Picture (cartoon, rainbow, N blue to C red):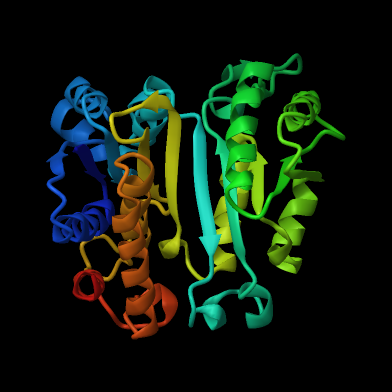
Length: 351
């Protein structure tokens, strides 16, 4: 089993180190190979996604990714900025389905921005499309008729893109509680109307899954009003980016949410994918030793489950995280004092 480890920038270096320790503690014989990506790669090679890094990823069974983003690179041309590395990986490796589970661990109910009786009911999965929408549509600057500067980004989906992400979401719902909510803005956007029409068509193949539709503004409200109503949520790239970050605060901290980005490629062990915490590189706290590595550790568990066929090992990691949290291994984002390495130690000890 081969895994490409891409720590990236800022706290990505620190949290990935702890996730690697947890994987190595399982003694599964996984070959872990590190490579540069993001701002660190640009500084070393002049590009945020060097050819050798992409080649390593293509030769691996999965990718453990930290975070990208470096203030030193803010003035670069857009195609050279650190964030282009993750977009480039998603596109080059056809990673079109992002899975972001959100669940409140026992004992963390009071750390949510919501009332404990509301947050304790959260157990949902957001399935976000990754290869389309405004992130990959035509974009640029132009001059309007009156001389004003205009920026534009084209939002578009074709039905094949919607169909394949819908199938992923319906299958995920089959493995959970059998409920799927499709989020769009079909009352305003033609792109969303196509999205809704195609999701309804795909639903015919899954009579065991109940399908509801919700406008994105209402979905944002319902996530704080009654998040327990959601099982699986499927939505486009832009809406999914926003709603999944909102869900992170509903469960207590962005430092607790893992994610998987999957495609159609199958390895000898499972589905090829890229696994990362949903938080960014947090340059303001990088190097200080108190970033919460739990989301990256939980991402490693998802890697083991989906790409390496190691479901039992993934269960062990998740159980160890739950025990460590119950025993008080809380980072500053959760009101505790535990540092990055201390949290990693706590999880390894409970394996």
